[in-house]
Amino acid sequence: MKLLTKLIAINSIYPHEGEIAAFLESYLYDLWFTVDKQYLRTEVVVSIEDEQRYNLLASKWPQGDGRA
Image (cartoon, rainbow, N blue to C red):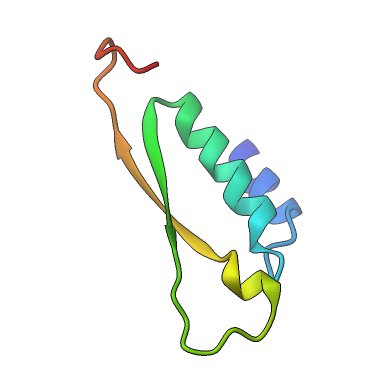
């Protein structure tokens, strides 16, 4: 429930997705996930926020594999 409470408290409605993405990136990294950003391509860029939008791609590292 603590994670859900934290997620709900973060404003993630467009164009404010960056804060929740940063939180999730850090949270997943702490759980030994590798996290990559997949930037979105759009035909029409309406604002600077559109250029900075991305999805997070996470995959689990086996513990002890030497993650730096």
